[in-house]
Image (cartoon, rainbow over all chains, first blue to last red; front, side, top):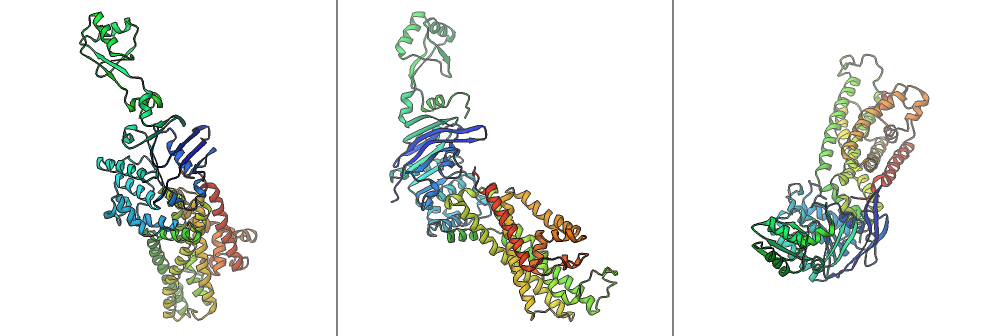
Length: 300
Length: 281
């Protein structure tokens, strides 16, 4: 069984001309867990992963696997499996030949090709030209490439993009199983909801810099709860809240009040003689905390 | 382990698992076969009297070769005209990596990029040499029987002919490396193909013709890649047709080979720094 090594980003920085893509990013990814690498599109996720894999040279800083840079790994495909984008294929080559090329390059046994194609569910399409593959099949082929060397570390960039619901369910189970075997799994996404069912830890970046790091559950505790209150006469309710010095915003199901206790809001409405039709505490969703962290103005 | 041997084997696998190589080889065979067979029939026909020079339209131009050298001229069509094919496969094999973003899986499997480019150069040299054999199969395989039919000695027992054949194979291999070099210098596939076709079919023939009118420029013109290739092979329709006869100023075959090799290495090294070792995004 391959053992996972830690992934270490240390003060990594990348500028393209005057534009800073990644700014002093440091974090560690542990084996045996699935780590979600999250941030809006353009936050620097792909650039960070490409620096980790030696495809993009950092302006400064290092990204290593247990202290070893990718290009210094003696058997890179056996240590790290990476799937970056869904289009790194020659369209005229079959899946079997595509994987065969890199099996040869890495000196891996040829039997790995069919093994990984079966593993990702493409066994029946091995001899079909990749140009005719759907986006979902290309994602699976990218994943098959990552698995060629039976690596201890998996680095997957947006692996859920383009998958059908069945594929999404499959990859969630797959990621959990990989981590359960002791492998290090780093998976990026611009949507928390896509990966929140499969990740243990989250690393969130925005505009190239780290904004949150920790177990998934830590996202919930970061967010302040809100009270949802509604009335047939929303104007009167709003006036009563303002008079009591509370701020609110208008939500889809009622007024969202930044207060800790539903009782106090109910009492306030009662005292003002406003009929209340709904009153409950709403814990901000993970997605809301995520959006708050990555900042407004970043439409996903 | 990602040894050089593995990397070279992977580069061969890349070439052989798409249709490009045999389509180009097929077109090369047909093109050179038609040209060599047709012109062998024309020239040999004239020399044997089966076709009258007037009928052939060569009204006293003096451009007709000395028929003692007809076989080398016909055989050298393999490289003097066919050299665009190894350049094309070299350029396409290299620019395809950029176009289809296969540099990513390539560099993930073999992170030492210099080794990958070296492996590509070696694999393409071999494929270019094989293209040379295909082109010779057309120029010799069709040209010789045609000349024989017109009672012109195809010189197949002459060791000079076989030396020419061997040097043609070498030249075609070097041309494929020049294609790799062009591909890394100009990674845009469309731009690369346009440059190959424009340069080989138009710019260089014109430059060589223009340079051949004066002694000084003719000497410089010898260092053009096509002229160097023809010097390496030892015969070409271009040198035969040039006003000064070409032979006066032509490079020795080994000098031509070194000039061609220099083009290949300079382009490849330049491309390594210009694109190959850059960020893959």
